[in-house]
Length: 305
Image (cartoon, rainbow, N blue to C red; front, side, top):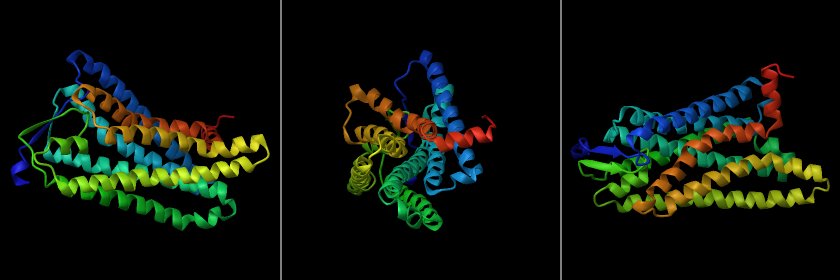
């Protein structure tokens, strides 16, 4: 690693012309500030209203916290590149961004899986809900999510340190993505490939299969409800999670599973924007606008009838 400290990573976001950078800067700044405001609002509403101190809303609060960190890892540096024109990152800067990005991405995926389990218990086993997801279990789940995400990111970080690079590396993306860095390395790493495939199974395929299983059982329970209004009300409690999960997994899987040739690299960056920038911004909108309790608590705090 001592011989790699002089390596510079040349970040090339969207192959932009100089005249387009102010517009893109304004768009990403607006998205970032909107996302921060909305997620902080959700956190504030949940923390200040004691009626929302239940497992489902605790997970909402954690999701908003992760989304704030998630976008903060990526967007501020992108804004600096667009504003200053300085698109060179050192090894330390690039690897630090990768570490925190993987950590928050892992935490987000794990939390979405847990939120699916929460909806499964609430709908399929309502009488046991508060016994299974009591306060201690919720705290344990939250701590486990962050520890698992940190350790997972640390494994990638250790293997990244074993890669070698040429003096200047061009990255056709708007942030230091681990796949782009690996592809730009000299020689690659067998261990890195093994970890990458294991990552796709543990944080990709496994949560999706479990969530599909949960929703199959949820749909079965919903179909047994005789009242049409009751079915609609029950399904609406998990529709927000289902929407977010579909958007996040569909775009993320396309980016990391399908190889993109140089001619379509811009499409890869656009898809990356969806799951790294737009999803964290729309999460609070999807959850708060579709949740009557959060809307009610928001009006109460703002003293709106």
